[in-house]
Amino acid sequence: MAIAEFLEPAIKDYATQAKATYSAPINTSTFAQKVAPQDAMTTQAAALATQGVGSYSPYLQAAQTAQTQGAGALGQAATAVGGLGAIQGQAGNIAQGQAGMTGPQAYQPFMSPYQSQVIDATLSEFDRSRGQGQQNIKDQAFASGNFGGGREGAMLGQYNADSLADRSALQASMLQQGFGQANQLAQQNFANQGQLFNNQQNLFQMQNQQNLSNQGLAGAYGNQMNQQFGLSDFGRQGMGQDINALGSLGAANQAQQQAQLNADRINNQTAAYEPYGRLSQYGNTLTGLAGGVAGQQYQQEEAADPYASALAGATGVAGLFGQIYGGRKFP
Image (cartoon, rainbow, N blue to C red; front, side):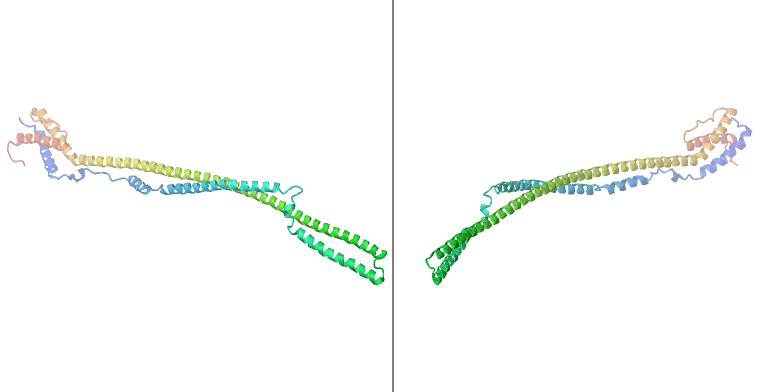
């Protein structure tokens, strides 16, 4: 069937464009599938995870140290409790001994064991001097011619009475002196024992206070241990949350980058095949017009692929060329 003359220039123009289009190479390098690089946040999450390995160890070591110190404080407290019993026992013994230092006979343990010997020796010397005095009175009476007389007797009687009184006074004084010293020593010992008892009581209070302090210290170390364990758990949980957050954000960013790469690849393909699409539409239009004018034998179905669609259009137009030139050379 003959082709309408008004289509011949358009068909020739189509042929020129088709030749130029199919002669130009397509840069398919932009069609390659690309993988988005790892996001910086994902890299940071990995680095943080690496750095966090064993980061809780100092807290665990601090907890272990606190536990050891707490155990030591408890041991000291137990030792102090044992010492309290001993101190209390000693204080009881002192108090019991002090109770035996009272009463009218409390001085006797402090009497000198040599007092009798000292008194006897002193009185013996006194008696010797007294005998010498009696002899002197007799010698004087003999010298004055009154020996054996009443005067001599009176003088001896008075002398003996005075000397016996002096002897009794001397003996009493020595006994009183010994009693006074013994009583003073007893009182001093009683006071010393009282002071010792007070010292034991003070020592008991100090030891008890030390015991309470050690117990409190053990409790503080226990709290410190729990705090270190808590810091360890908190640090690991916080780091885990940071790593998860960074990993999620990094994955989202990488997915967005990958989507952009995929879109760019599709856009590059579309742009590369766009001339073929236009050429396909041009050819299909010419074929349709020719078919509408001279029949339907050159009508082509549109292909989904731009390159295939253009090729289909070119095939239809090639038939038109055959109709126009009937085997003649295309000018």
